[in-house]
Image 1 (tube, rainbow, N blue to C red):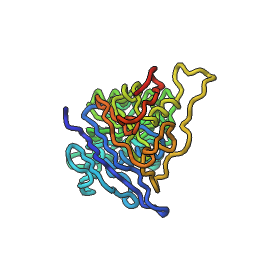
Image 2 (image 1 turned 30 degrees about the vertical axis):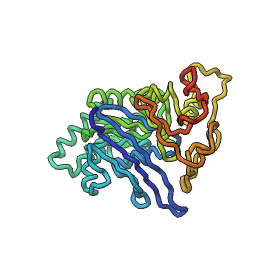
Image 3 (image 1 turned 120 degrees about the vertical axis):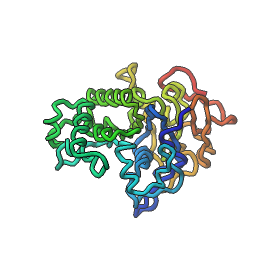
Image 4 (image 1 turned 90 degrees about the vertical axis):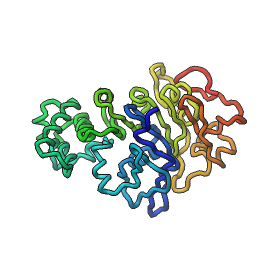
Length: 341
């Protein structure tokens, strides 16, 4: 096995607020290998974006701070780097595609200038080279008439075009890893499909590793090799896409899969919602974060966090139902008939 390009080890990250400490990420571990696409899925507030932004130290500090754990990029500890080293790393080693292009594109700057800005302060890159590489990348992401588009402002582009510009900005520095945070949010289904095909094509052409953060399981199924399911600041299940969808091993994952419509869903069929609310991360529960909403919760689920159970083939689940002494439970995967034992 090659060494992972990104290796997150037992990461805990919190925010100090007037109301107290928010424990946004609690002991999260995941890795990304060269050339693969990894998905991080979960509902809003589960810690997906905070975990990923730690790779470039994009979370504001203060109020944010790391409580523990390590984050290694190509074997080097990101939290041990200086701010100058992080500036050199952003865009050239790791590119980041933010979820709302209108928020992150500067409305007062032309598109071409914003893509070229990635090279500002980079040694050995002239203004002419920056302009040429910017135009090449805009063409690569499917923007036609690059000269005219480069002289336009963000408000003159459609939502899909703006997202393509964000991808161009993330790729123009030639990074080894792209982190795409909800890359298809607020786009219609046609443009969403185009953006996903674009990312997949760029991965195959450039060999770039990709981390996709999303709550959309359709995106996960289409794009990813492996998946990490997060809930309440923790990873509750992880594994290859096939295992997550067809051999579901955590009640929260089953709940996510059961709450979406599928091709065979009839108009009269009711989608099953996950009842209840996410845990309060000002005061996280001592046991499993999903226990209060779980149909299968036992006393131990409320009292102690479940260890990670290795289910084979890279598939793991942090659920007490996997314990050898737990009573058999029919945890049915909505994506496949039968029982997950």
